[in-house]
Image (cartoon, rainbow, N blue to C red; front, side, top):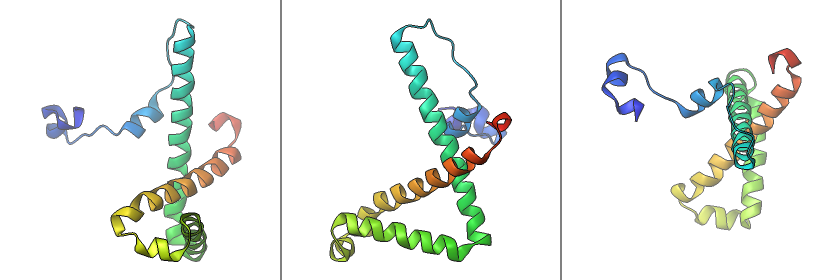
Length: 127
């Protein structure tokens, strides 16, 4: 809604939900069980978004610095998808739009993998 507002258009701003989520620092609750569950879900979502963003940044770096490594990983991940679907005949039978969710899931999985490794390597004060 903000991105469609006159203020956003005039100022050239947009609201990215992932960027907004990364900036959130805390939550006020009354310690009821439903409030604790909301906090836990919010925290997991935020961790997922942060891991994915670190991972996608790493993938972008790999495109310019280690393209052959990235290419090998993408080939392996694509082969895993093809195998999970039942072989290359079934994969080849899918059109581009039907393949898109599988490719999106594969890329997000790679980003999460890299992001978790990067977060684990960060010092505690940067966490």
